[in-house]
Image (cartoon, rainbow, N blue to C red):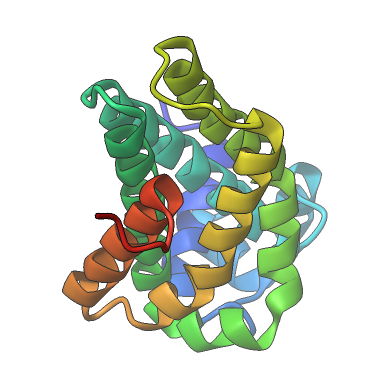
Length: 191
């Protein structure tokens, strides 16, 4: 059953994809769902709220994908790689989904920052879980909190660059492999 709220979200998604965030309006969404503009405001106070509802649904789908990818792996290293790769592919998918919005997203970074802040704790907890499993298995000997914060900072540092280079995922994966290697084995030459 497709509720009015879901119809609004799906219509907003189509409109943002087709026209971009700035050009799409609440009136356009109302016309698409065959409702009055005032009835749309009953569910969402602004176009920004519609956008965040779309992003939230995409984030829930991504979270499911991430946990499935992590479950398939055995080592903390492979789990972290699967986490980062799946997370980044999800973000790239979102950017592709809103191809018309793609450049606008980078113009109005406050939209991205709002979403990032909302999911920061969840990401922190996921990485911490991966690292803790390594500590419990005796594979890792680290300060889990500090290592988690560092890894999250690294991921977020590359996030924008990877999203901009989404057409060349091979290079992004090569970069990721180097980063994972540095995280787990450091930068010193081993003998």
